[in-house]
Image (cartoon, rainbow, N blue to C red):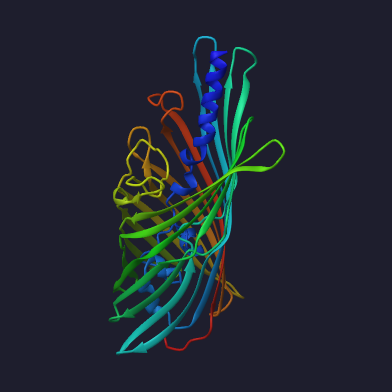
Length: 437
C-alpha cells in the first residue's frame, strides 16, 4: 500500500511538472526565416539577396534595385523522446517513459521593399513582419510510469497543448551602398502583440487547464556589413544587439470536475524582464563558376547573458527562454553552417537547386555540461519564371541525441532523442526595375 501511494505521489508530481520541465520547442534555437536561407543551411550572412536579409544581413538590401514583395509559409513537425528508465525497489519495480510530439504551421515571414537613390548612394528600405517567439504549437506531451510486481500497471499523465497564431515583430530596415564594394544596413526589430498557449493536463484523477497569455515589449537592433573585395566573393558580418525588455504574462488556471464543470478558477499576472543576448555572424559567399554559389557561416551567441527575471516569483532570475528547472547552466555557443546553390537555365525558367548543412549548439547542455548539438540537412528548389516571379520550396531535417539527467536518479543519465522535419514555401514578386542594378 505504501508503495502504491508513493507511485501515485510521483505521478501527481510528474503531472504538475511535465510541461515546464519538458518544453524543447521553447528551447530549440534555429531561426528559419527564408526558404532560400533554410535550403542553404542558413549560411546566409554573406548571401542575403532576398528580403529575409532584414534578419540575416540588412546590408544586402542595398543591392536590390526593384520594389519587391515576399512571404513564406512554414510547416514543422517535431518529436522529442527519452529512452525508458527503470528503478528497482523492494516490492515495486518501476519504469518511466516520456515523449513529446507537436506541429507548427504558419505564415512566418512577410516583407515589402523599395529602392532609392540619394546622397550619391544606392539605398534599400524594407518593412517586415515575422515571428520571433512562435506560440502556434499544437501537440501533446505524455509521461508514463509503470510498476510491478503485478502486471506492469501503467499510470499516465498527458499535456495537450495548442497556441495562438500571430506576428510578433515589426521590422524596419534601411541599407546603403557606401561604395561599389561596401554596403551597410540596419534593422530595428520592434516586438508587439501577444501569444497564448493553452495546456490541458490529464491523468487518472484530475483534469487541470492552464492558459498563458504573454507579450514581449521592446526592440533589438541588427547591424550588417557586406564587403565584396572581388566580383566572385562576398564577405558579410551581422551583429544582433543585446537588450532587456518587459515581458507581460498572465496565467488562468482551472479544474474540470467529474460533471464537466469548471471549478477552482484562479488568475495570476506578472511583469517580468527578459534579457536577450547579443549574437554575431560572419559569412563568406563564393562564386567559383557562373552556375555555382557556395556559402559559409560562423555565428556566436552569448546565451549565458540571457535571463528571465521576476517570472511569477519576485526576485527570481532564471535562464531565458528556458522557463524550467534544467540543472545545467546555459552556454555561450558557436554554430557552423554550409550552403550551396546550382543554377540551371531551362527553356521556360531558371532552376535553382540548393543544399545545406548546419550544426547549431543549443542554449542548454547535456548531463555532462556540454551544449546539445542539433544537426540539420536541407535541400531546396526554386523556379524563377521571370525577373518578376520566383517560387521556392525547401525541406530541412534536424536530429539530435544527448544524455539527460535520469528521472529517478539524476546521476544515472538517460539517452534523449530529438528529430524535426520542416517544409517551407515562399513567393517573391518584383514589380519591375526602377534603377539599374
